[in-house]
Image 1 (tube, helix red, strand yellow):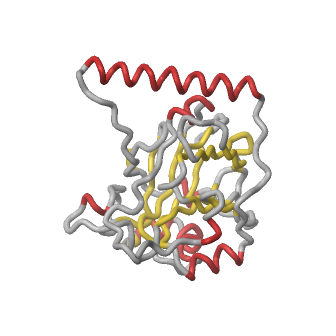
Image 2: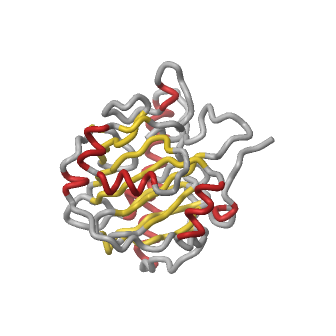
Image 3: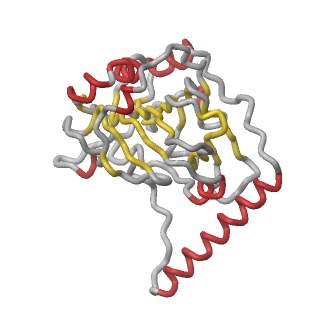
Length: 257
């Protein structure tokens, strides 16, 4: 039967929406409660919706009973501190699974390439239902930072680099695309990440905010690109050698973050 997917994401696996142009009090992402939860890089997360309405970030399939990343339970104490962010996550009217704020410490382009990953968004998702994708709403003004998106983790021939100023909004099929962020700054980057179920509600939201599968991509000097690719290859080789020395095969697992 197959899953219900958004046609807007078919071409590149993501869309860039109109920039969010309202100011938000930074208290909404600075005063919520965070937990140590590692994704790609040095990160913490502040959940606003979770599997059971508790302040934790585990995949819904790791709870009892296990289920897919849908029907998240909102956390009142976090919603109270972040009302605008909650409103933004709920605006599409699509089913919400996990919803959380990520705090990412500064890193290099090479770090981002090494940390490229796919998300295990649709584990236990019943066939014939909406495919789970993720919305990324950048909160801090990270003008020198950018999202790195690839179809193939180690192939730089198709690499999209999307700028992340305050208000940048993307919807990404993160189970399809390898992705990470190069955060070039002195302070942490904050971003709202929401798991949404594909369907007519999300399609209408994408149309309302003029979602487009291409954008003006961040231009990076070729020597930086080459050095980053070489460093990714070096780290990958070192990781493979580490597992080989233990008599194990390296496995690229999808991220549960």
